[in-house]
Amino acid sequence: MNIAGLLLLISIGALPQQTLESQLRQQQQLLQEQRQELQELQRQVERSLNLLQEIRREQDGQEQTSCSAQIRWVGGAERRSVPPGDAVSVQLNLFSTVSRPSGNCLPAAVRMTASYLDANDNLVCTGVIQGVARQNSLTESINLEVRPWDFGNFVWWRNEPPQTNIGPKDLFCFNPDGQAQATRAQLERVVSVRIWTTVLPPGGGLSTAELQLDLQR
Image 1 (spheres, rainbow, N blue to C red):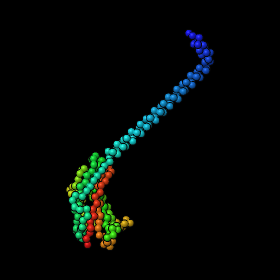
Image 2 (image 1 turned 180 degrees about the horizontal axis):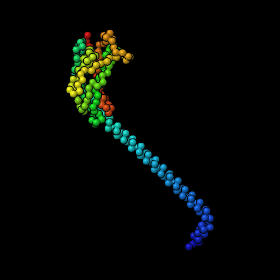
Image 3 (image 1 turned 135 degrees about the vertical axis):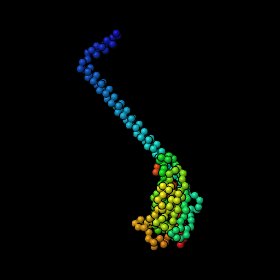
Image 4 (image 1 turned 120 degrees about the vertical axis):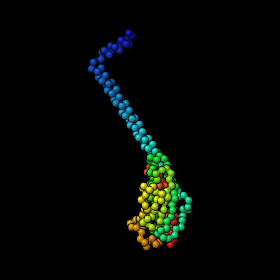
C-alpha cells in the first residue's frame, strides 16, 4: 500500500463513528429525495400521455360522427306560379344524400319552413314543420305535396312507408313577433311563399333546398 492510501485509511479511522453515521444518513436522504423527484416526473409524464390519448380519442370520435348531407330539387323550376284555392297543391320532388357512417348519420330528419311575404317582400308570417319526412338510407327520393292555401293540410309525405304513414301535417304560421298566428286579414296581403326543406343527420351537418311559390288571387 502506498503512503497516500495509508494516510486515507488513517484519516477515516480517525473520524468519529457519529460523523460517519451522519454522513451516511445525509446520503440516504439525498437518494430518497432524488427517487421521489423521479417518481413525480414519471407521474407527470403519465398524466400528459393520458391527456394526449383522451384528446386523440375525442378527435377520432368527432371524425367518426361528423356527417354531411345534400338535398336538391328533382326537375321543375325553383320558382313557380300557383293558382288560388285551398285544394291547389304543388308536387315537390327531392333527392337527398347523407354521408357515412350509417350508424351515426341515419336516420336523418327532414324539416320544412314556410315564410309568407307581401308584395314588398315583408314577412307576414312564418312556420316550421318538424318531421316532414325521415331519411333511412344514404340516398333517398323524397316526394312531398304542399297545399300553400290550406294550413290545416299543408304538407304530405307522398312516398312515406305505409307502416308509418300519418297523413298531412299542419302549418302554424306565426306573425313576425312570434306571439300569434297570422289572421285572415293579414294573409290577404300575401303574394308569395318561400319554402325551405332541410335534411338534418343526427351526427351533425345539414343541407337545404329553397323554393318560391308566387300565389295568384
